[in-house]
Structure formats: structure tokens, C-alpha cells
Length: 388
Ligand SMILES: *Cc1c(COP(=O)(O)O)cnc(C)c1O
Image (tube, rainbow, N blue to C red):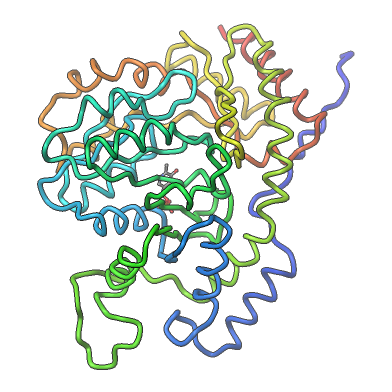
């Protein structure tokens, strides 16, 4: 063996230090462990809204609930239609379906894996109540084209920003783009309290309705059990908020590192025969890099799965891409479109390829050293060459 030993000890995830520890003790000793009467959720919302340039933020139980609440506040209801990319995590469509709305999948772009805006435009009907771009892996969807489509059609945008904490589109933060945005703080996300979510609101009216709905229809100060709207309990607790305040302080430094590493890794991966990394788009002026994604175009789903197993065996935290949402049984249980799988697949040819040939690496790889980026690309090349 002439090969030198590779250090594949990437930084661990999640990360924490005394800031989280002190936050948890602060919440504990505050003596109020829910947001009513506590400070941590309120302060986190202020800090998170300010960080994203949004007038208001509302902390909630998780990202799926954040999407559901965002859609409900925009008036999405039984019988309406919500346009979602076919290539995304299933929460994007489940949130709409939980409200009784039909989730209408549309195709994505082959190089960004983000919603194809022309396909979204073609799917608008008189029942469409929202369009949900997902900023895949932190690369922001074409928010200029979407803003124009929204203005022309009158259909509001809901950003699924579960991958996009701290992202910027043409110098604007995601809270400054004039639309509602939903984020997740699940264990693997770019900031985490194990579980958690948030909604960024562009105006006071939608925030206030969101607040009511996330707290059983009850205003902050109600003591008479007068519930102004329908709703549910999507409130975040004080412990989680104290951890998220600490995580937010660390986010910018981590994004800086990942923004340095990805162009290097993407360049190295692009030099591996058969590998095409997710596109770099200058219009995403800050990309937090939730995943390091690449395609091996033409690879079958079976071979791709073997490749991922081999990458894991060789020490990389590798994963298969999301399955096309319409290819899971759960998508069809209720509020599915009146089309067959084959019909949807026929109008989503790019999704049909991407979900089979794409691979992603955990974002903690991008917190590694420059040398480790070389190791990653070498390992991908070796594993690909070893495929039968
Ligand atoms: C993680 C994720 C969600 C859901 O967030 P949870 O906090 O896990 O409920 C929604 N959309 C996308 C694209 C995600 O990756």
C-alpha cells in the first residue's frame, strides 16, 4: 500500500459548548418551561427574525408544522391546490395535505434541483393557493422569477427554507424577500435543538394570525379561554429556544467555513469522470450548504444505492437523494392530485433522473479541512471506479 493514511474524522454534528449548557440552565432555573411567562422563546424569535431581516418570527414545534402553519395563514384550505417541487422532503407536500389541500408536484431543474418556475407556472389553476419553492441544500430557488409569477398570478409564495438558515438571494436575506418562510431545527439541520421550527412573516397581520393559530387560537394575554380562531398547539418550549439562541450565535462562522469548502470540493468532484456537482449560482450570495450534493447522471437507482453503501464503507457520511414525492405510498393516502404516478412522472422527467442518480454528503463534511475535501473527491473517484 503506497497510499497515505487519510484523516476522515470530520467534525461531529450537532455542535455545542457552554453557551448551550448555560442556556439550558437558564431555562431550567427560570421556573417557566413554556413560552407563556418565559423569556427564551420570545428572545429567540426576536434574534432569529433580526438575523434573517424578517419583521416577525414565530418559533414552533418543528419544520413540518412551520410549513402547515404558514400555508394555513395564507388561506390554504380543503380543496385548494399547493404547487410543490416533486424533488423534496415529503413534509413539503404533507403540510398541504394535512390541511386537505391537493399537493401538485412539478419538475425541478437538472443542475440546481430547485423548482422549475416554468413548470410551476404551467400548473397554476383557479384553485392554486400557494407555490412552495424549496431551497435545496441551501441553494436559493429563482426568487426573481417566482416573485414575478406570484405578482402576475396573485398566488402567494411560501419558502420551504428548511435547508436555508442564513441564505441570501442577490444580497437579500430570506426574510427580506416579501414572502413567508418556514425553517426546521431538526437534529440534522444547520441549527438544531433536536426538534423545532420557525416561520418568518413579512407583515404584522400574518404574524398575528400565525401566533393565534400556533397557540390554540388564543391571544398572548388571554385569561378567559376565549379562542379567537381555530388552531392547534405548535408552541416551542423554553429549553429548545435557549439551545437555539446558542446555535444561532455559531451559525455565521459555520456558514463561512462551508462557503469556503464547497467551491473547492465542487471543483474536485467535477473533475471526477461521471460526477456533476450541484450547480453554484452567483445569485445565491450566501449559501449555508445544508448538503454537499452531486449527481452521477445515467447511473441506475440500484447502482447509485450500491455506490452510497460503498462510500459509507469507505468512511463518508453519504446518503441517497430524496425519492420523488409521488413515488411514496404516503403521498397517495389523501389529497393527492387526480393523476396517476405515470402521468406525474411523464411531466417530471428531471425529477425521475435526479432522485435516482443523486447523492448527498452531510454538511459536517464541509466543516472539515481543505485536505479532507481532496480525500472526499478521491474516495468518490475510487468508489465509482470500483462499481461493477
Ligand atoms: C427537514 C425538512 C422539513 C421538515 O422539518 P422537520 O423539522 O423535520 O419537521 C421540511 N422540508 C424540508 C425540505 C426538509 O428537509
